[in-house]
Image 1 (cartoon, rainbow, N blue to C red):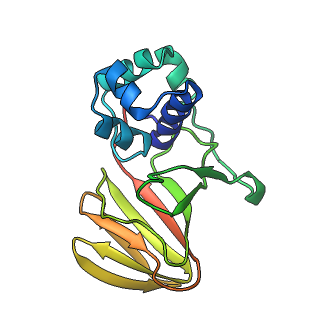
Image 2: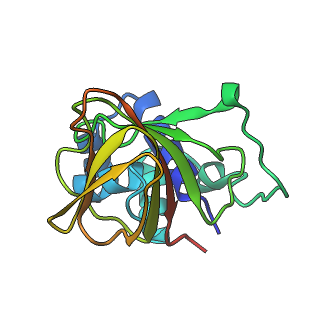
Length: 188
């Protein structure tokens, strides 16, 4: 199994390091820009042929892209000072994502702390592979799931099929903190 978040981060970092836009990567790889965006924002698990095309377009050896992704330490501790922010859908969302398990490359779950700014959140509902769990730690949020609006506050949780259109926003005047766990398909 390969960690989708780490693979997505490596692809996005390599593209930006080379000064390429998503349009340029799409042209060089022969893959649609929309698919590449979903790969970079860890919304889909790319097929092996797609990964091969992406690596070739970025001029990165495939083994370098996968290096260390199969390592599985027994434990992974992330100290407060080591939490790593991950960029995700910045054009569509003001939510900040903090990876709570980044040292463990090979994992079945992707836990994040989300900071949903006052008056902010995701603009449009989205879908992705797998399942998702949200737990509101601080503040209040509005969660839209397939056109149903659910008001959630500190202490509330929701578990759902992430292939159903969903989005999270904060209509209040204070930032909200949410723990989010993604669980989805992986490359084997």
